[in-house]
Image (cartoon, rainbow, N blue to C red):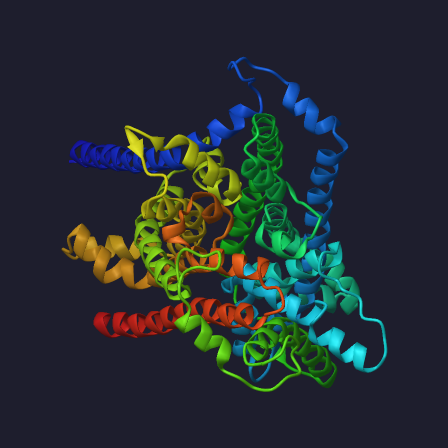
Length: 576
């Protein structure tokens, strides 16, 4: 009897191993064909000459040339400073939100995620509306006869934009960890005579170190790979991504080789930060399983001092989140060039009735239709990819797991500009010629988006108790039935979060889309970018189109949140 059980167990183990290997093969085939191979072609330009011989000349060139050195150094230090400031801004908020309960707390947490789902171009336009030469700050200072600084084109505006855009990521990571801290350690330290400050630095902060490192490395990666914000706000300040795009657009042979060398330098740095993120996240997950199982909570009712601190922070968050978006919204209804003019709907009417021409081969409505279609198709392609990635990350253990996880999540730290140009280079001629088609846009959006969805689904799968599925199987449920009736309702939130982020990434993606899209398939971000470039004296259309792009991203996020609640309620009733 025991021998039969062992044989059955080993057979199930072999079946599981074959399934894991099959899923890995599918994922790696997709990853190699549409990410690693295109990037390999670009990177090879950095270490080969025109005849294909290996050379270090171009790497030496970019490290010796003052312009390229400045680009690399600026990219590094702005990412470092942006990530540190982002963490400094998010840390007290995460601490206060985890420590105190107050009315409107859920709204504040939800509102803090808005910058992450709003396309970066809309944020850039909002900052132009505030700090630009015709912005609200300039108008107010001019009315007071005070010289107004034009921050657009400065390095300060880039740092400010990065803090705005990335603090929701840091806030969520830190808030999750603060909420899971073991309160008994804090109570023990206080009972032994340690003050609040000493307890914080000797008990709380050491438990936060891996979450801090995780947030810092992820925000650094995003700021290091920044493109749209620097392209619109940076002026002559180029990050590596913007410089790579300039070299690709120039199409000189020497420039393409230097672009390949820059991609290599960028990839090495991003691989290091991605590894740090995965390593620190795994340490957080391991500790969270132990800490969260303990009873108790650190939350308490808000005190007068806490009310002041929370109120100040909440007002600051709401100001940072909503002011740029509010300025864009108001600007879309102003008749003049500045935000202090008569009300009008002309800009929206102009967008709705505008024909192709004036530098555009499609109408604004065409670009909206393209973006919605590509977003939906990206979501449909990303969901199975994200699910399979999360599944193998949960199922596979042992040696090499961290490396395999990093490889599967590699697109998270890949250069979107290089990826787009690499796809064009790899698949522009028979037997596979997809350059200029709509599906190359969907492919590049899916490559960029699926790692984000995988992390969301992975979190849900990691917290799913496997004994529930085993119990269902022992009661006679088939594997398919136990999945749909037991597992799916519990991991559905992660799947829906993956769906919304896939759609949101597609709606707001600019870097790769600029490289792969043909005139027929211009998306909303590309159209907005060209509108900003040619705004001239008419800023109204730029604001109005930004509102449409912002509303599309926000409504998609809101609709899936509603669907998530409906499905979760249905799932609970179905089980009962």
